[in-house]
Length: 225
Image (tube, rainbow, N blue to C red; front, side, top):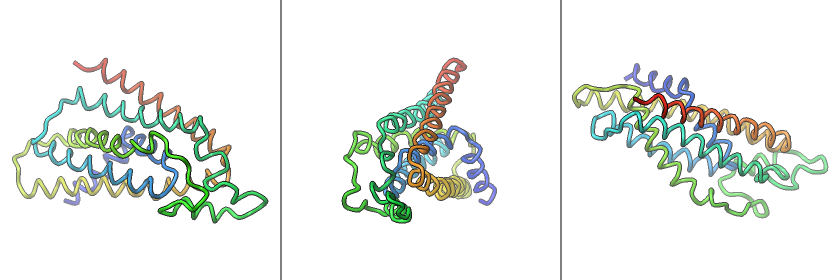
C-alpha cells in the first residue's frame, strides 16, 4: 500500500499532462468555491474510471485516451485564455474597489477565499461557469483511464489489489491537494496585488499550455499505430 501511495503521488507530480490540466483548472477558478467543486468533480470522475479500468471492468485503448487527455488540457486552457482576454476577474482585482486609495489587500483576499462572494462582487455567470462541472467531470473520466493505463495491471482481482489501487488513488489525491493548497493562494495574491501583471502572466502561461496541449494532440494522433 505504501509503495502504491508513492507511485500515485509520483505519477501525478511527474505526469506533466495531468499537472497542466490541474493548473488550467486553477487558473480558471476565481474563488474557493470554484476550486472545491471543480476538484471534487475531477476527483470523483477519475477515481471511478481508474478503479474500473485497473480492475479490467472497462477497457479503452491508449490510442483514444491519450489524445483526448491532451485535448482536455487544450480545451480548459483555451477557455481560460478567452476569459483572461475578456478581462474576467482582472479589471480591478478579485473584489473591485477594495484596494484602491492605498487600502489593504486583506479584504479582497478573504473575499476570494470565502465560499460565497460578498455583495457587490459577484460577476455575471458565463457559459463556462454553467458547464464547468459537467465538462470537468467528463474529462476526469478520461484521465482516470489514463491513470490506470500507467500501472499496466494484469493481475487477477483480489483484496490486496483493491487496497493497492485505492492507495495509488489516495497518493494522486494527496499531491493534487498539495498543488491546490500552494498554487491557488498564490494566484489569489497575484490577482489582488497586481491585477494587470497577473493578466499578462496568466495569459502567457495559459497560451503556452494551449500550445503544448495541441502539440501533444498532434503527436499522439500521428504516432498512433
